Image (cartoon, rainbow, N blue to C red; front, top):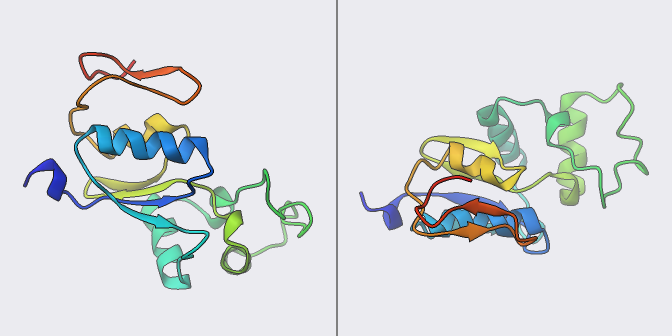
Length: 144
């Protein structure tokens, strides 16, 4: 199977620098992923639950706090059940932290962006840096 045929999906927010960096790393490996802009096309309950299970995390670990109604909804409180937290993410997709990447090697919340390299063990095609200029991959395709 060629790199371009490897199935990779990214739950992406194009307004997020980390999400854009992850997308660049996936493409730098020669893969054109399926891009799901999850704010426009949110996952359904079964998909969200499956992603959480496959990442091996709890729903609370996927909650995004910054720039969301997290505080306003009182989600810091410990009384929320996993099911209730998933309901909140379904009702307010901005609460879903991103980017989530699905590859044949695993599913992961890729924060920081270089976390994607753990589940995409393909050679990087060239140097790449984060949007802030921090190098991620050197000219030999190695992680910095």
